[in-house]
Image (spheres, helix red, strand yellow):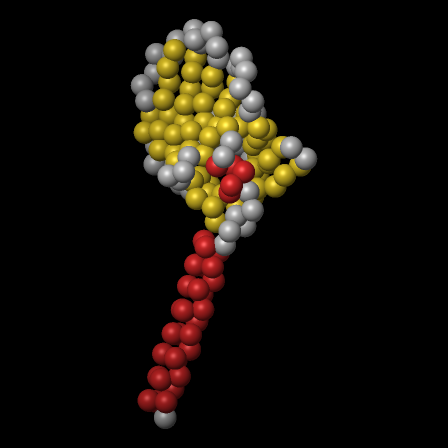
Length: 151
């Protein structure tokens, strides 16, 4: 009787393990509906993405090439993102955040910050961060893509 019980427990554990692992893999392999759009554009952002880990929401609008001062964000093809303050004059405090990203499912993105670089008038050294991953829900409101931090 003990042997049958042990076999049933092992079988149950095995089934649960593989079904949970399959669901996690399914989420990572799901096609993100915003992936192509996010990766093929440069975005004006209301704040530098990832600079402050406490920011709850970012608004992204497509950037068109012009004389511009503000924050720009791009998502590269090697799962690396860059978010920075830019200005045409060149004599200002410039901040650049570099990090990694990954699409979690069809409407989420995970980011982690690797470094923050200060240039221009800043007299600060580069910060190397080991930040934890932050998950954002991606939504769209007309032409604005909204990243909302998940709890």
